[in-house]
Image (cartoon, rainbow, N blue to C red; front, side, top):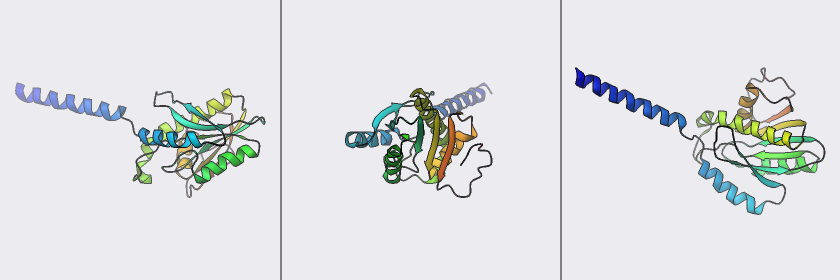
Length: 190
């Protein structure tokens, strides 16, 4: 009987340690994010690289900042498995700056190159934290009117940010490519 109890105690302890390890494990592919940052930053023509960090102490993440004197700014949130200067996102961040809006295009959590969309929801809490850090960065720079422009998976991530307590400085959201979702809970222009 004592042997069985000891065996059970060891199994329970092993399960607890495993659960704690999984809970504290990193979900995003930070090595992939770093590789992209190392590739993007040297060739950057418009904007400056800045590195932000979430409150839970995750690694720093890249953001591309282009200032403006207008007092208005946009956080640009990319889609599935890409980076803050990719194609459409790079065009958005630079064109918005050309039109007088400060832009801050942020690296969202990414998974491995072969990851499918249904693998991404565990990254959403960190994604919402990154958006909150981007908004805080822009507010600290003096921007009082902030919009979020998001694309594809970035829109699903942004929706998690808006489901929490979005900063009142965020006045609008342009959600590109997130069909069929329910926006009823969002209380600002979309």
